[in-house]
Image (cartoon, rainbow, N blue to C red; front, side, top):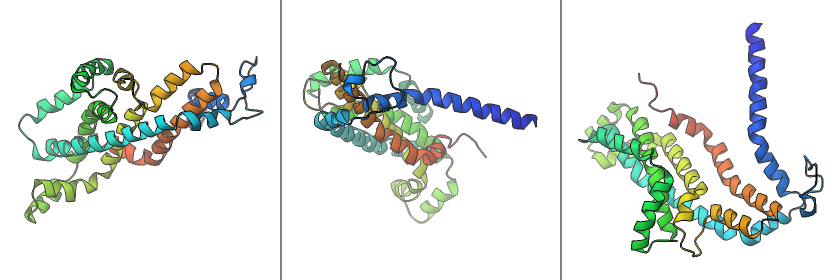
Length: 273
């Protein structure tokens, strides 16, 4: 009986905390549907009693280029991260190169460097190279955050793959690359999905690199679009919140679809037989 009561109490506490954490998201949706003339109503409506889609029409008119740029940068970051992190993780997990331990330590330290410090370094490099305000420049910058994380995830996951599997491939005549491509990578689906998801989310939500490396051109992600939108239309809060809602949809959908793979990918290597 005590355990049942304790379980119910924990459930209630969990529900209350969930409501508190999700309330800002609900309020963002509520404001996005609120007519402009009701925006300063006191007290505000807890529900959109007279919903309007003017804010969403404004998003379609003004923010689509920013969304397209963010999608391009996000997918490019995913591709570059997987291209670099997967072979590196395989090498550290199965080939055991000389200095692999030191490299793992360097990758761990790289994740501790504040983003603004890296952004200022990139600004000097990109200014000399003429890469400011280029979409592929932002892909390179965002990948510096995602690649160390990806290498650690792939290393942990691939370390758990039985050595007998790779040994059988070598007996059949497969080299290191063929073993990686045809044997190890297909069974590392959970790690691939995890790294791809986090890489996309980091690139999609990046503001520091985008704002620092923006040279005043046309290639701006949605984070800069929202930032500029607040400055230019600071009274049109329904449009601002509608932009935030639209920008949140891809991340929310990807998290829901990939949560099973992410749970398996992140916990890989945590338990050793």
